[in-house]
Image (cartoon, rainbow, N blue to C red; front, side, top):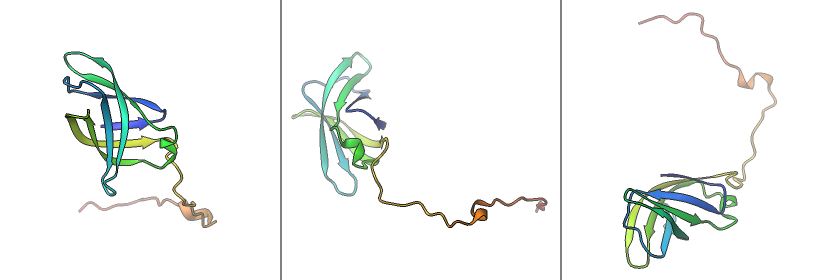
Length: 119
């Protein structure tokens, strides 16, 4: 699942139709193993899928949270779904890097191939 986080509320759809109750969308970092518990509400449910509205903190997209996470959709007593989730935020937060420019005009030079033998 890929989730673009640009607002404080985003929608997540799951093929699990047994989702009931007060639901949480839990993101677990693969390296740090820390949980970010996000409240979710069921917006729509039918015989095929369930649509959840997940509420993110206001400063979530500014904390450089881009990456791959484990996600869990659960209520206090039942885990409904687990898997991987790719989080993409805009602007994605600061990385602390400065782009390097050597000042040489030919730095981005591309070569032309005039003859290439076939072996």
